[in-house]
Length: 349
Ligand code: ASP
Image (cartoon, rainbow, N blue to C red; front, side, top):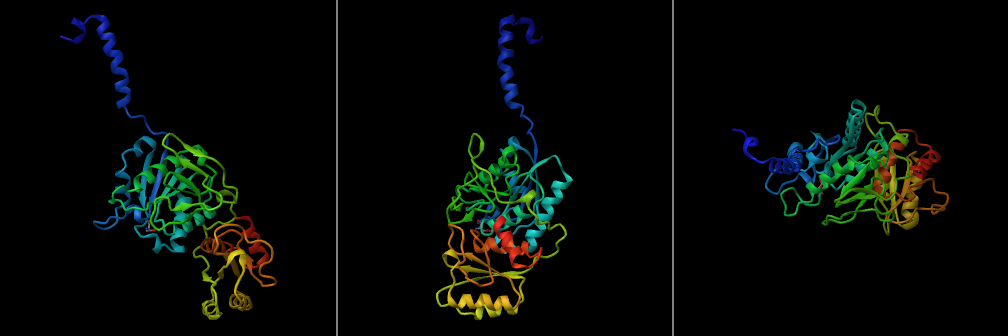
C-alpha cells in the first residue's frame, strides 16, 4: 500500500512542500570553481605532538572548504620558512607559472607557508608570477594542534579570497587573521600574535569577512603581468648580502662581504638613508670592487628621498625594507648592474 492511497490530498501537498527545502539543504551545491593548494610547511602544519602535518591532511582537516571550492592539494615541501632559500622561491615561481599555464580553468592558487619569511616569498612571487589570477599565501601563528589554532580559518579564508573575482589582478596576497595584505607592503611585526602581519603605512587591501571578501583598494606598484622579471629561464639568482649599519660601524664587515664577490649588497641604513662614516667608506669600497650597493632604511615608514648619500655611488631602496630590497635587487641583477637602471627598478616596483 503506498502512502498516497489513504492520506487526504491536502496533507500530501503539505508534506511535499516541507520536504523540498530539506532536500535542497542536504544536497550540497557544487562549488563554483577549482583552487590549487600548494603546501610548504611552517607553523600552520606544525604539531607539538610530532612531525609536521602533510599537505593533504591540512586540507582534510577543513570540511568547510568543500562549500567554497573544489580543492586540489600538492605538497611541495615540509619545512620551517626560516629554512627557505632563493632556490625554493625559484622552484615555487616555476610551479605556479606552470600550473597556471597548463590549466586555464584554475581559479587561483593558495600557498601555505611559514610566517617567518612569508613576506620575502610573497614579494618574490608577486614579481615573477606571469598570471593575473590570485595567488594567496596563508600561514598561522599557532600550531595545528594548539588551542585555538588559527591555521584552519586562515586556509579557509585564503581559498575564499582565491575564489573572489576581485582578487584577480591584485598581485600576490597574504591572508591571515581575516586581513588581506599586499605582498609588497605586509611586514611580520609580532613574534606571537595572530595579528602579526601589518602594512605599516598603507593598511590592508581588504578583509576576509564572514559574509564576504571585500577589497578597499588596489595594489598599484608593478607586479605579476606588469612585471618585467621572467624567471622561467633563470637557473639561479645572483647572491645578495644584507649588511646593517650601526653606531661605530667600520668597514671590515664590508671587506669580508666584498671578498665573497656577491652580485650585490643591501646596506640597512638609519632613517632617511643616512649612514655612519664607516658605512659610507664601505659603499666606496664595494663600488670600487664593482659591486652594486642598495641603501634601504631600517625604519618602516616613509620613502628615502633627496640625496642623503651625497655623491656616494649607491641606489636608494625608497620605502622597501632591507629584506625586500634584497629580493628586488636579486631580480634586477638578472637584467644588469648599471646604477641608473637599478635605481629605475627601485622607483617602479
Ligand atoms: N613560526 C613560524 C610560522 O609561523 C615558523 C615558520 O615560519 O616556518 O610559520
